[in-house]
Length: 193
Image (tube, rainbow, N blue to C red):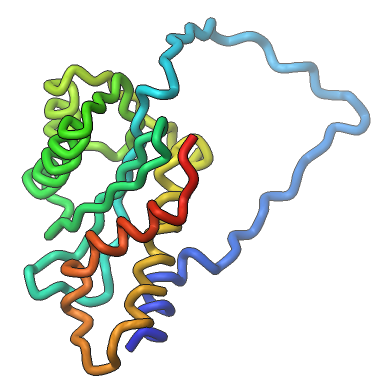
């Protein structure tokens, strides 16, 4: 069942996407683009930043009804937190964010800036702002900016590898019960900043 899991859930991780061919103006016939807008930058301390995203639907619903994993990266400690979620509803996502922020506060960490995917709901934004945290949305199709994207890949690979080591008779529906230990082992393998 692990090979099916790796095929279904990890497919997006291993399939290369075709690159767009670069168009080059060798004759220099096109004028340079005109300046359209001024850009204003607000600088945040990188040590007070958190990035978050969620995985796609897990191939097997857990015995507790969870199907997704909320992933948060705390930049200063290079720490990845993974919380299981039942679905992508506002209530489920806010509950996962409460768990994450309670954990961060127990460690005396308080991010001043939270970088989110651009598909974030108003309710989630409202909750994050209630924690005295600014929000920055990643622009569409620019996933390199969001550190959580690489963390999502890392936690997916780590979950697949961890589930490959359990007994063959262990039900796959217990994946969310293993999540805290998988999170800890993943963070032990990472270096802090």
